Length: 257
Image (cartoon, rainbow, N blue to C red; front, side, top):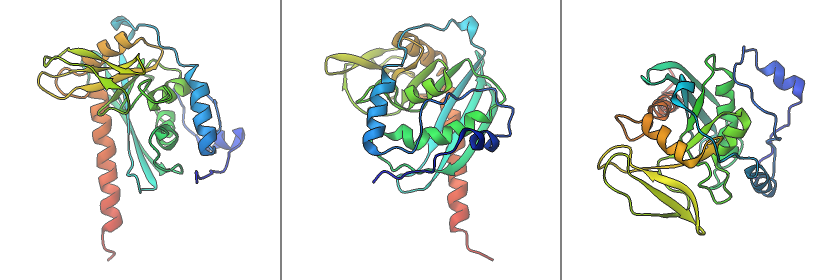
């Protein structure tokens, strides 16, 4: 069964956020959905994703990375959003939020588990990013609507999905040098790319989140990953979320005095 969370009215949700939010979250849908409703919503929202567009370097000063640490059996999600300056990729702001997750772990519906916690983190940001890179799938999803697409629409930001592993599609041969790119193909359609960010290191899986072409997504992932496999914003977000998750687990098992 897909659990149902209590739906909040607009006034109640507004009272819950006493922050001077700079990131606006669009009210696209309710979260208390059945499995079938969630799948139908993905298919409907996928048609709203913009898969064209470019973002010149001169227009980007801040890049955000987003990640969630949540075990399959755990009921607490830890969301981290790290904003870095561009082009030096130095941290400007880090927000880490922990909150209950109500949706179960179901492949293909991960955004319904992780996006609500991430939204809480984005509402607390004081720096407005020009670009968002999400540690997760975007268009490279069975219904073409992964976490990066979901967040991209909710936040109305140029968004890239940059995942550590493949969810669907067939990989094409990829060169070993940094900057090598190969298409990820599903049902005869290019749904994303394998991008080698470091020579001899496993590639990342890049796909459109919202508001950018796939080619622009590839370029920005490489620009933001000069030294490590992961782009610096998502690498830092991954680290921040995991550190908080480890601290919570350690606190849970610590014997009482």
